Amino acid sequence: MSNYAEIREKFEKSGQGHVFKYWGGLTDSQKSRLLSQLEEVDLEEIAHLNETLLFANKTESQVDFSRLEPAPYVKYSENKEADPVWQKAKSVGEEAIRAGKLAAFVVAGGQGTRLGYDAPKGTLPISPVKHKPFFQIFAEKIRCAQEKYGVEIPFMVMTSIINHTQICDFFKSNAYFGLNPEKVVFFKQGFIPSVDKFGKIILSDKGEIALAPNGHGGCLRAMVRSGAIAKLKELGVEYISYFQVDNPLVNIIDPYFLGFHILGNSEMSSKMIPKAYPLEKVGHFCIYNGKLCVIEYSDLPASYQEMRDENGGLKFVAGSVAIHILNVDFVEAKGADDSDCKLPFHVAFKKVPFLDQGGNVVKPEKPNGYKYEMFVFDALESAKNPLVLEGLRCDEFSAVKNKEGIDSPATCKRDQRRQFAEWLEAAGVSLERDSEKTPVYDIEISPLFASNKADFVEKWNALEKKPEIRDGLYIE
Ligand code: UTP
Image (cartoon, rainbow, N blue to C red; front, side, top):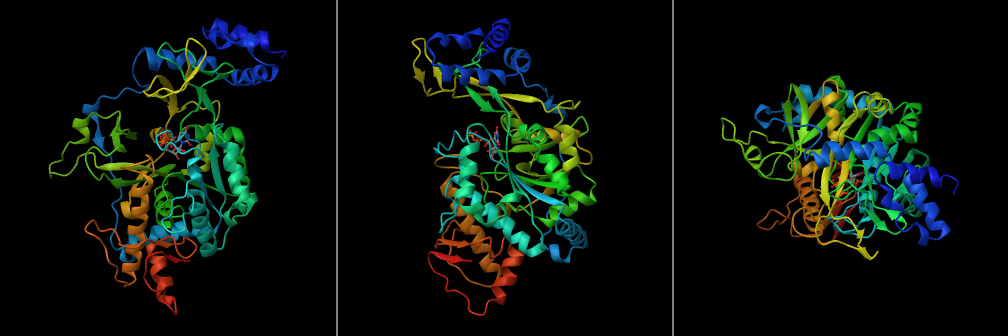
């Protein structure tokens, strides 16, 4: 523990010396664990964030809402096959996929506190019949595209200190769900200590500080620092299909989206879906100071979320569903340590386990600590030609955030069943649905059979013997 004196002095000097309060009673291994945690802490960054976000009680970027305008977007085409603009995008996208220029990327480093599942969220069983975990669904979607385009598609998985080992082990023990292990790249995002209302680092145990992953925006730095970007460049990848771990409906390899991104000469593009209701908890695509940005629901006053345009529709209708395409070169530049346009941090008030005066660990019932996070969509502001493409909710998005109620496993399974029913109906199969348009059966279509409606219809029609529609039907 040669570095003890030096680290202690640094922490004392920056007003964080309390992290050594229980030092004398720690075992040697606890001491070296604590020191290795502290060594990684950027005290200057914490001091800056405390000053600018916590004490000043604001986000790093202040917005004058009255100057916000809704973002323009490429409208969804109901008839893509007959629309020359969409067809052109598709062929450009497909050409890039076939040439091995696209990688898939899931951000899975989050804590999933609202769900409260005691394993990484990506391992939660979520498909309606076979109970496949998120990670398996994603891997199978990638395998389906690999087969279709005759190319290996690298899959990057961002983890964090809280779940890295569990996620790597999960893939390993499931034989990478059929993917080539050499093309599955795991890397850890950075973390940052949580602080109390005085900006003091919270101790989560006598020899441990409360560490949290630094937000999904931490992926830019992490991709560069971990060497993931270098690996993608080595493989000839130019574009990254970014999505989050809790949305099994995501169309990971979408040639239309990639084609629009390439044709638009964009460095970062986003999918949007119209909000389901005014106060839906999603980010809003807006234009501010002439730039595309996303304003989180929690930062946008309700009056703006509910605002109507001259036609009576929602003015800020474009909801962000955390699906993007990023250029590898753009990530490399933005994520560099010396980048001159780093992502801003935001502060969130959350429940953080802490030590009480008597040194006992307390799991709080109410928020008590502040977490600093970066958001990936803040990168849009410095991207050249950022583009927003409209997608269909039923084909793109149903996220699992909560244990019960809205955005829960139950609503997500329902949405998967609705999507599968839609595809079957498009192929001419009639299905019984209840008054809420949910099929009365538990049905599931494997991504290994098809992972979009058009491919499903084609394959279904080619089947010589079609399976009988019944409860528990699984099509593979
Ligand atoms: P959320 O913002 O929904 O956070 O993440 P969460 O951690 O899943 O859940 P709560 O808020 O604690 O309940 C959206 C996506 O971003 C990833 C998550 O894994 C999820 O895919 N994420 C979030 C990260 O990869 N790192 C982070 O630091 C935060």
